[in-house]
Image (cartoon, rainbow, N blue to C red; front, side, top):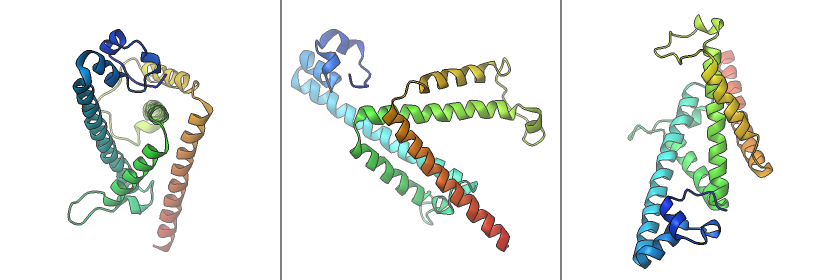
Length: 201
């Protein structure tokens, strides 16, 4: 069954929901006719396009921030002289998104997106524990908000994320591992370039 989200209307009106590749449009065609199916399809295209554009823009800002901190090559931190946007990061993010979109199915892309988000959430929770350590207190500014119940919430979230990640398939694992490896290579390149620059200076 495709990884999609089907509202109660589709559950109650579409007999072959489990085998449908476009459940919302198929359900709309049954109780609204062809025009209803077309309307649902157009709405889905607009929604997906908007989401993809938003992800491309937000993802490029992540690359820019990492480059600005020296964790990625300076190439990703270039700001357009006229529009004041991270031009290289926007182009790279858009190209990668396009390649992924045309090279895989929606189900594969949705699963990969969910896995990468879980990894980010897991790292964030781990960072929360690290920043609460006595050693970190002397090196970072005091927190404006502290999660209650000590380490209980971060540890619970880490356990949930690890439990979900334990169920990934082999292709999903390999694809995410490849993405992490590519990021690690860029990080090593950036840190070595920074170290070489510091030695010259």
